[in-house]
Length: 261
Length: 261
Image (cartoon, rainbow over all chains, first blue to last red; front, side):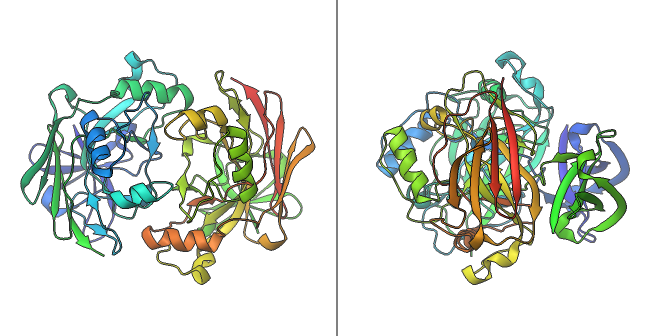
C-alpha cells in the first residue's frame, strides 16, 4: 500500500491518503500507522500537491553505509577511507525537508553540491531492545531520500549543520510504500534524464535490522521516526538548473530541480 | 511569564499553562507562542506532573561554547583543546528528553557519566536571514537543559548518538520563562545538594545573537525549535543514586535523579 501526504491546491489543507493503482488518492483521517479511516474524499493525483510524506519525530541517518561511496568520498577529499566498525547512527534536521517536485535551493556561497540517493525506513511502532530478528517488526514502510550535500562545508565545519541541513537539502518522498522487497531493489540516480549512479539498494555495510537492533538497545524508536540508510557511488557536481531523480525499484521516483538562491 | 507543560495525574491529559507567583498553574488551549487562551482551569503546581515544557521541532545544540569546558574536556581525554573558529550548530534527539523530576537511566554498559548544565533558547517565531541585532526577536523564552554525556562513547563512536542521546539523557525544564536577564545569570550545578560547578551563563564563546544570525543564513528557524547553548566547567563522574540539579538565575532549577538500568 502506498501512503501519500498531499494538500488541496485551493485550500492548502493537508491530508494523508492512500494512493491506488489508478493514481487516485483516497484521503484519510489520522496518521498512516494509526489505522486511520477513509474520509470518502477521492482526488486524482494530478489534482493535488504532493507533500513530504511525513514530518519525522526524530530524523536519523546512517551516513557512511556503502563501501564504494566511502572509498570514492575519501579519494575525492584526499582523506583516508575510514570504514565504520559499528552501526553508529547520525542525525539530519527537519527544516531541510522538501517534497517530491519542490526545488532544492543552492545557497549563493555553496560551491560543491552533490546528491546522495538513499533508501528511507519509516518506523510505525514504538520499539526498544529489539533483536536483529525482531527489528523489522517496527517498520511501517519505505520511501526515498536525497541527502543533498555541500562537500566543502562537510570538510570545513565542525558539524553537518549547513553541509547537509541547509533549507531544502533533504528531499523525501514521493510516498511511503508498505510493500517493499529490498533484495530485488536497485537505486538509480539520474541527472537531467541521464543515469549517473546505480547500485544494489541492499549492498549496505550494516543492514536495516543491525541498525534498528543496535539503536533500540539505547533509545526508543517512535512511530514517525525515519532512518535514512546511506548511499553508494559518487555524484557529479550539481548546478542550478539540473533536475535530479532518485528512483528505487518498487518505491517510485523522487524528482527535484536545483535552483540558485 | 513562566510557561509550563503539565499532565493531570488522574487522566494523564497534557496541557500547557501559565505558572503564577503563587505556584498555581492556569491551563491554556494551544501552544504558548501562539497567544493561547486560558481554559479557566487552575491547578496547584504540587497537584500536577511537570512535563517536558515542549517537544522541539528541531533540537539544536551548540556543543563546545565555553572556553574553560573545552580546555578541561581536552585535558580529561588527553586530546588537544580545539576552540571552534565559527558558530557551527549541532543536534540532539527528541527521544532523549525527560522532564524535571524524572529519572535519568544509566545504561548498564555506561562507564563515565557526566552532567552539562546549559541555558536553552526557545524559538517563538519563524525566522530566516536575521542580523545579529534582529536575532533575539525570534526568541520566545528560556529554560534549562542537562546535556548528560557518556564520555567513553563520546570518544569511541563516530557520532554522539548514544553518548548524548540515549533515552533520558536530555532533561529539560522545569518551565520556559519569557523574562530572563542573561547578563545577570549564573549557572550552578549541584550533586546531592553540594555545588560542583558554577559559571556566568553569559560567558559564551559565541553568543546567542551570533548563533541565531548564522543559523538563519542557511536555515529557517521555526516556533518550537530549541537551541542548547553549551556548558562551562567540569562535571564529576555521576553514579546511580546521585541527584543533579542545574539552576540558572531567574529560570528556577532542573532536578533529576540518576538510576541504574
